[in-house]
Amino acid sequence: MASKVKERSPACEGSSSPSLFIALAVAALTFLVFLPALQNGFLNWDDQANFLDNVHYRGLGWTQLSWMLTTFHGGPYQPLSWLSFGADYLLWGMSAAGYHLTNVLIHCVNASLFCLLTRRLLRLAWRQEPAAEPALSLCAAFSALLFSVHPLRVESVAWVTERRDVLSGAFFLLCLICYVKAHSGALAETRRRSLLRAALGLYACSLLSKAIAVGLPLLLLALDFYPLRRLQDAAGAWSRPRLRSALQEKIPFILLAAAAAITALLAQAQAEALVSWGRYGLGPRLLQAVYGAGFYLGKTLVPCRLSPLYALSAPLRQSWRPYLLCGGTAAGLSLAALWWRRRWPALLTAWLSYLVLLAPVSGLAQAGDQYVADRYSYLSCLSWAALAGGGLMLCWRARREQRLGLRSWRLLVLAAVLSLAGLAQAAWRQTGIWHDSQRLWQRVLALDGDIAVAHYNLGTCLAEQGRLGEAVEHFQRAEALRPQAIEVYNNLAIAYWKLGESESALRCYDEALRIQPDSALTHANLGAALVHLKRLPQAEAQYRQALRLRPDSSAYYDMLGMVLTAQGRWPESIEPFTQAVRLNPRDADAHYRLALALGRSGRTQQSAQELEETLRLKPDHAAANSLGNLLGGGRLRQ
Image (cartoon, rainbow, N blue to C red; front, side, top):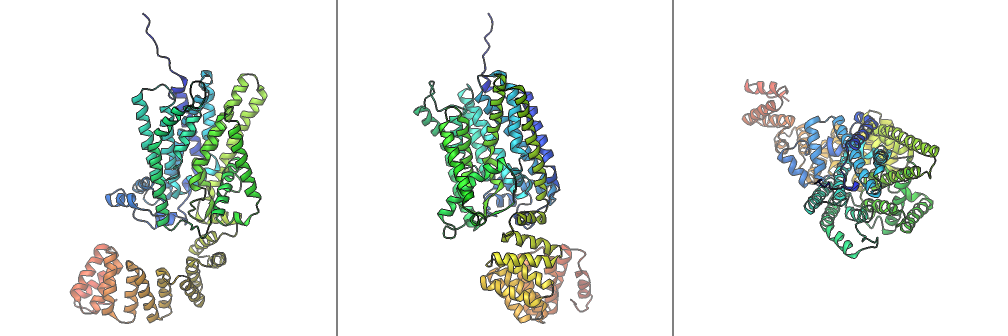
């Protein structure tokens, strides 16, 4: 008796070895395109605060893990992203190349995952055509490369801070693969439930990397419509029981999305990143949402004039033409997707997926000063890349059915290859813009010279290079564009001071304090300037005011102590120096200054203890001579 062989649907087959090889080839090509990112450094735009000035993420000990799980540092709640940065620190220390390598590798993994996902989706769309399998792999590779080497991806990959985009994207794609696999064939119920639980867990990981995919439950419903076709009965009509079942299945995903959305809003509010409704009303937000819907689609088709920063006020300076164009495009696509939902259902799925993934960054809950951002396209534009692969598949079928001539097919394939090559070249060039802070801000200002933060950050770069005259020009321009920004006045004052224009520097500090009297940093900076001008009583008053505002600053206590010693008030300086070493017990110089104050005040035993602590922290410190003098009965000298 012949054994029965269970027939498997092409829609539920796993990825074959050739398709896996193609996915790996996609990853390799993506890596080559983003190779210049490994030469990039940290930027003075979030990287400074997140990595260079932040010691809390450095490692994977309990202290670091506790901070990662509880912090809203910088705005977003992203514990898994911080976990990856902690691992980076253990591997690379503070070498920027290692952090960039991790970003690029995760993006390459995403390219492979998207290739496998798109192949599965295309197979579902053409499940009655097993002969299409070779074409499926090639069309999926085209989709994956269209996504991965597009210059719109550069911001997410070449900027260390945006690790959250690529990491969230990896879990997001794995979630979709599990979900589609759970519903793309005749699986045992236990297997299907296991895949759905895995999808839910991966979705949670995506949200814990960055809460950008809160619209995923609606995206899953769109996939249920097409290509999974779960919402229709055998006759092709909509089925209420099936719809009810699909909605019930999404409840855990919806609960996760709601929790992530609320947490994200609370985090942004705590970081004071949310733009108030009083400053930015409903009308401009709706216009921004309409503009964004057309912007990312337009930049996907024509990726020119890409900027690291599209300032919030910039489009408002434009005419109504961009809004009419974007609004008309969105309305036209919506009508076309609904009209052709039976003949070309893929268009409706792609359009809905695009909108729901774009919704969190549409501007309705505006955070930051950007109107739109290239990084917001990382997940939202996946659907367009998949749709392009489907379009190529349609052309392949037309060629197979002799409805498309051989010459036309060859020209189409050549155009596809050339478009990928052009996008890869543009992405290579765009990656170079993110090489360092100076290039970055020069690019921003080349496209829009009226962005205050760009002038400020470029001025900071130039000041660090000693190009103070140029720095002052950019600081002055930033001051004119944003006259209420005290950080501009602080940096302008420092530049004036280094140029020897002390009175101009003092005027800048006075203006900064007029705008924000409770700025501890400005009081401290003014105090430092007054010290150099030998106006010690006034400097002391400024440092005391800074400490009133920031009583946890060891540096301010240290400076106050030095101002007191400069006036010969050694006994009074003991208290601020003691507070400085209490707040920062590893500061060898603060211990040394405390030792000098104690010694000058006749407390030699305590002075010797502080000198010993100084040498323990820094064995080559000048305290060795002071300790020798003290123990030898000589006079303790500064």
